[in-house]
Image (cartoon, chains in turn purple, brown):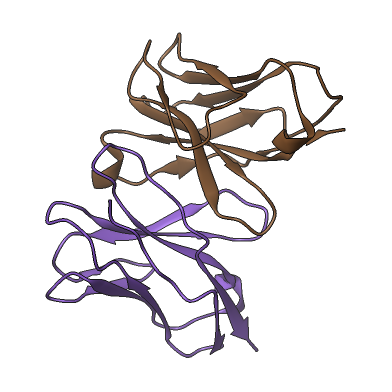
Amino acid sequence: DAKTTQPPSMDCAEGRAANLPCNHSTISGNEYVYWYRQIHSQGPQYIIHGLKNNETNEMASLIITEDRKSSTLILPHATLRDTAVYYCIVRHRDDKIIFGKGTRLHILP
Amino acid sequence: NAGVTQTPKFRVLKTGQSMTLLCAQDMNHEYMYWYRQDPGMGLRLIHYSVGEGTTAKGEVPDGYNVSRLKKQNFLLGLESAAPSQTSVYFCASTRERAWTGEQYFGPGTRLTVT
């Protein structure tokens, strides 16, 4: 089963791009990479997902390396409201989605 | 659409008491999930359901039971609550197989067992 590794915390200045890394070196060919975030005490919120190609939506961009062993979530212009815990998730073959501890992102004013 | 709703929002139980948490979704989603989140931890999957009338165990199923009698509802039961079950419980749903679609989460139920 693929596992993910994320730094426990990161800081980013308001208005700058926040780049959150995720390692998933054992990912299988048909497994997707998902990103969610959880703002304090709320339910997690879906951000973006991808398989092989880079993806972009109104919230963020997802860059997946060619070997698919790592990815980066990019918040292009971070605001204070982006302060949250960000989870990188890879689908398990037995249909369970496992959340790790994530990265606590602090946006600094 | 109300999305995913959870009842109740808060509850305090004494050890040994029982209760049922209700999750409801109005998006006609097939898949539903129950997670727990302990302080400073990520979410852990308790049970999930891939359709009406079906349930399956997740990472931490012990001490919990679930039922999916109607497609829109997923119930989580604690038969004999223990202090170790003090946690925030989140319900989620997806339209299809979760790895190709986003999960929608409810606001959570904060449970304290004394």
